[in-house]
Length: 289
Ligand code: PHE
Ligand code: CA
Ligand code: ZN
Ligand code: ZN
Ligand code: ZN
Image 1 (tube, protein in one colour):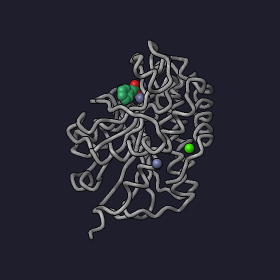
Image 2: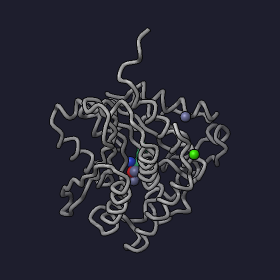
Image 3: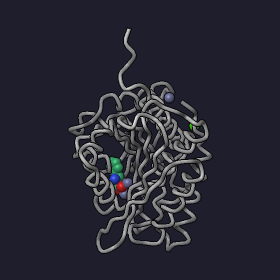
Image 4: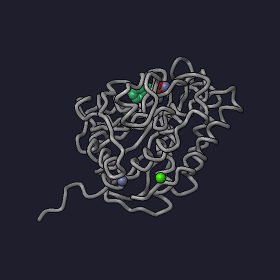
């Protein structure tokens, strides 16, 4: 898999920060900064050949959108999907939560196009609205799919907070969801093993958009660098962080800005996303003897 230049991901984060700054400081559901964020990501994908669509919904009396992007080609019966939420809370610009996951999958998608990657599976990306109001956009998307369309999605990988300033390296535990995928967990772990960074399994439960896919019976996995929880001393020793401090002290606050990012964590996680996409989009069944 390609090594994603973290500077490209940071450039997207700078753009999302600028969008928030010029729209009352946030990119929240129902606010102009959310619509501007959607338009920004869509334009990047349209320019390189993705088939994009906006899916509109209403929540709390405001219009929201999901952005779905399909990379032409691959087996339409076997879809690999990656996603993350694009909305922030109203309190701030949401750069770690979840500019990081949004920008990471955007840069991986742009890399697919740049390399004209033609995988066996069909690739689809999703940027969800109104996650912060209770997984509204991702739930709307999953509920909009006919049973036959759900069955085509072989796995959904979720990326919500991948550049926390005091980072942990968490992989969603396959046993943390009814449909948690051991294959996805192990592919994500294998990237960190390769680069010599220890990981921990985490039980994300219903706290992010993968849960909407899990409820629909779709295999799930993902990455996370931590939110409001305090880093232990064992974790600080393992990861070189600060014990007694939250993984993200600016979680859901106005200070979740472009300054609230650990660049090596963002780099490693985005490379892990690319590694997982390149690995999992291969043949459906492993080649026989
Ligand atoms: N979904 C949470 C939020 O957006 C963040 C989170 C992600 C928490 C993964 C736990 C695990 O606020
Ligand atoms: Ca990289
Ligand atoms: Zn959040
Ligand atoms: Zn989030
Ligand atoms: Zn790798």
